[in-house]
Length: 275
Image 1: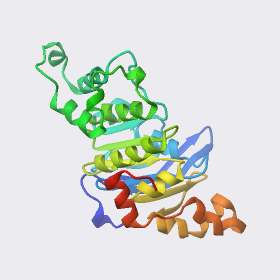
Image 2: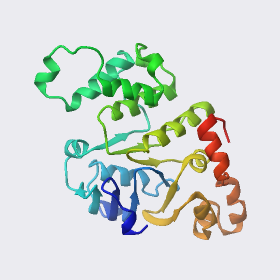
Image 3: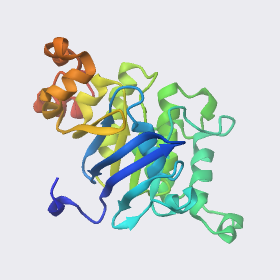
């Protein structure tokens, strides 16, 4: 990726290192992600994917540089990073199950409001909440208690709770784990809608989901960058084939990282049909 492609909204990670009591969990990883693409971070268990996300969001201490739109994130507190526009979801959705979808979003929207504005009576629904309901596909569930939503809908609600805060970058850790096929498709379409205006970085183990919806892919292995590029480029990389299946089984990597033709992927995005 050349410097010319980096924009004011880009997330740029440079020589990121994270150590725990002498153990190097991430050893000098560099990559970038940009609005308009859905960037996937993949790799075997222990590759350092979630640790990278933890360092970017301030949950783990790291060295190197992580910049969002030119602003350095490393060394800042979690709340400061949130205020700079970084949203993050976890593998298990964190929602208020006794409250309605609308109430969950109202609480999330209030995180950036002043104490005075929270005390004032509000007329109607915040436009940002209406937009998040529409974008996440939860408009019809606005009055539904979050606790009775499906697993996929709870994940969409957590994403919507990030959207009402208008993040510049959204980082998601295994967002489709445990979802049905239809929910995975809907989630991929949602991520592409979100990515039109902000950075979307996805940590994922679901290779089918990755190949259908990734714009670009970064592959980590043992805390270092193994490969990056389009799905086709990563699939063809002998290093990736060796890590995932061993050199002898490299030929069958196609079975794991089969590339869907671009026209098929576009069709899936348009019609919602599975691969």
